[in-house]
Amino acid sequence: MKPAKLKERKVRIQKLNRALKKLFPVAVIELNFSNPWELMVAVQLSAQSTDKGVNKITEKLFKKYKTLDAYLKADPREFEQDIFASGFYRNKAKNILGAARMLKAEFGGKLPKTIEEMLRLPGVARKTATVVLKEAHGVVAGVTVDTHVIRFVQRYDLSDYKDPVRIERDLMELLPKKEWGTFTHRVIHYGRYVAPARKYDTTLDPLIKIYPPAASRFRT
Image (cartoon, rainbow, N blue to C red; front, side, top):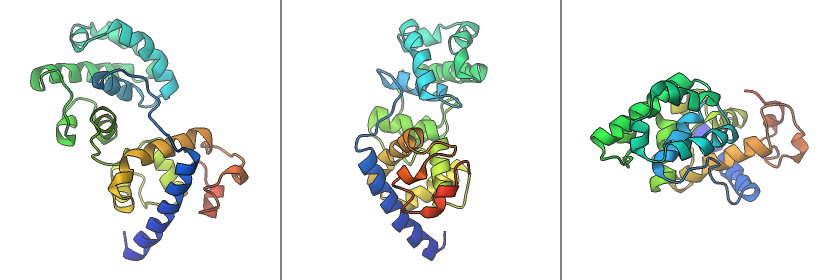
């Protein structure tokens, strides 16, 4: 990112972030879980699915599989059916059960606390790793980039890329580290409750005043 563009975007993201804080002073993850392992399962299930839909699945799933050992003993075909409604259920089942085996064999049954170790687990890319580390261990290892963040970044011209890894790199440069862990939650809430990926009344959107071109950008 060239210095002039970096400076311009830093000023804009600071204004946007202040507006987001006013809109959502307390923005937290909306997935339901009671321990770090359940969080990782829920986050993996949330790929290409809504948090609301995942919470319906995990309400039954976490009662059926109460411990890590229960996942180790799970019948793969039965587990696939248990998470069928999340979509891509075969791949998700393979990854979740594979992650359970790796945790047991290599990490003493506990989720690791470093990004490098998290990324070794089946089905875990940076999005899942950063969410789990932040929510389970309070470790901020980066900026979580999901579809809401990608759309937000493109609407408000905060990056020249569509690739999540490159976007994360840009956001880490634009935002102070103390904001990395909360920025994504506010953007997700903004996308869900204020600015959907379709035409809406932008006159009610306080962020548009900060960057008016965003008024004509919905699905970017």
